[in-house]
Length: 111
Image 1 (spheres, rainbow, N blue to C red):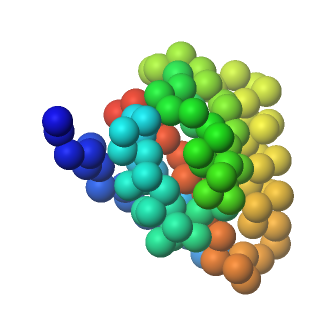
Image 2 (spheres, rainbow, N blue to C red):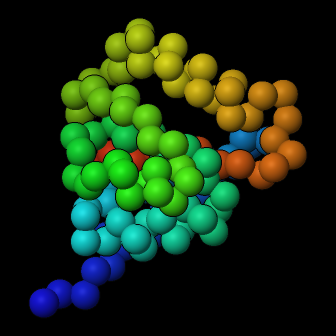
């Protein structure tokens, strides 16, 4: 039986009061490792832009909101997803980010 590992180390991107954690897609067997990374970076929300590879209940149990914003790999996101993304960023960060919140985003490859 293989020991679960992170496929690749998540990348933290910070700009002013905005913080984003970019990662590849967790699987059911290594989700707990990704949730530890999310906790370390104060992730309040995860945006999943790929097909589901784990159950959202585990994420929600960790106190993190999961947002489904799937669109075809290599394609530009449709207008409704762009609008949902902007609304999420405004909701999480507002004018300031005094709580140090972070939004995690993942796709299959973590690009």
